[in-house]
Amino acid sequence: MINNVLSNLFSKPATRNFPAKTREIAENVRGSVEFNTENCVYCGACALKCPANAIEVDRPAKKVTFDLYKCVACACCAEACRKGCIQMAKQYAHPSYRKMDVVFQGAPLLTDENGET
Amino acid sequence: MSNRTVIPFGPQHPVLPEPIQLKLELQDETVVSAVPHIGYVHRGIEKAAERMEYTQNVFLVERVCGICSFIHALCYCQGIEQLQNIEAPPRAKYLRVIWSELHRLHSHHLWLGLFADAFGYESLFMQFWRNREMLMDIFDKTAGSRVIISTCAIGGTRRDISDAHLQEILDTLDEVNKQLDKSIPVILNDYSVRKRTVGIGKITREQALELGAAGPVLRANGVAQDMRQLGYAAYGELGFEPVTENDGDCYARAKVRARECYQSVDLVRKAIRQLPDGEILTKPKGRPKGRVISRVEQPRGELLYFLAADGTNRLDRLRIRTPTFANVPPLVAMLPGCELADVPVIVLSIDPCISCTER
Image 1 (tube, chains in turn orange, purple):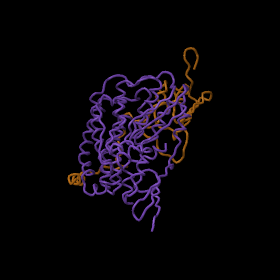
Image 2 (cartoon, chains in turn cyan, orange; image 1 turned 135 degrees about the horizontal axis):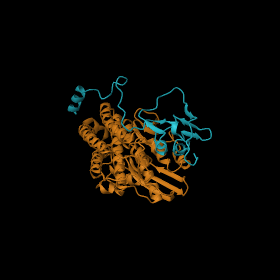
Image 3 (spheres, one colour; image 1 turned 90 degrees about the vertical axis):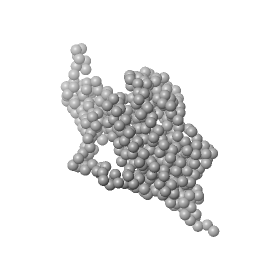
Image 4 (tube, one colour; image 1 turned 30 degrees about the horizontal axis):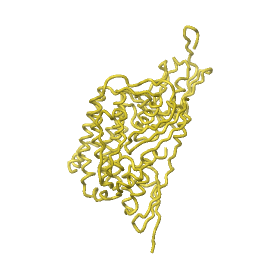
């Protein structure tokens, strides 16, 4: 035990000097969900897979509503999206004073060669 | 002439990490009887599981317990796999062992720290928790999250571990092993620690069996029962032997967990050495139908899931029995006859996880 005491006495602190030195974020971390609605076809696959019901897709209105504070960052939506519109960002969701939804609306609906969406 | 008093111990108490209330009846400073009350953190997860789709439940059951989240998901997924008649690929089985054992290792670190804190050894508490941080970093790197790692899926795992990360795990385990060599002897050999734990909270082997103790509480009484002996995931191929002690007191329970730390390190090393190449996910076909009981070993003991499904995309019933629930009756048997000052040590010695218990 005495070795432990001495090594702790002369070693650097185990904690980080936080605001000055932040923690390095790991490479493939599931931080927070990021939408890129440019290619979105509003198929609703993400909303179906979401275990927390954090995503609502309104196809006629071309609208995606995402409740950031219901999200559990499981990355199911990112796996379900075939258009690659959803990515997991390498940063954690920021704290906020109000609980608000993120709404995307009005991106073009893509059609295939048969004219179907 | 009687001068008995009743002291409520908990639900908020400095040594208790989670809310359980024990109504202690005392004769002077000696506990005569204890009545446990739970129900402070009930979240209705079993009912919620009936409303969600069975594929989404994987993420729900992980939230039963933050400390062994992966093992809950594993138990659930194994149950669904049995119902759907599919088997996870060999690589996924080994990955499951790696993540399960890392969870056990970090849970035991957490417990050893809390146990030290229960008899007022705060510096030792910090030593263990500092070492635990290395394990949390592994989860962050390999799974993308520190606590709820969400890597288990029905039919395998959602993520693979790269060779670079496997090497990193091995390096970290070397360091963890080195630190354990420094800290474990303090728990096991220190005079004041032994004074607070040896012979305290003793139950007999017969009592442990009769009251249905699980996990390290049972194994500290010399009963070699561990669900990993069933050989689920890849445990059957790793030559697993349960750790047992014979004294049945707080010291024996600490010793079992301390030895299990080393065992987990060995199991992860062995699993990495034998890790086969190949797929990590078998695509499930159809929907689950039937009834099944799935059992795995959590850091605290045997975890039991009962699943009933009728072929739709929702379960009929999900019943979760956690090891702490099984260990409450033995706890009530340990308390009578002990001093009031020993109550925190005894309560902590069963490694209570009340959030698990109440689901």
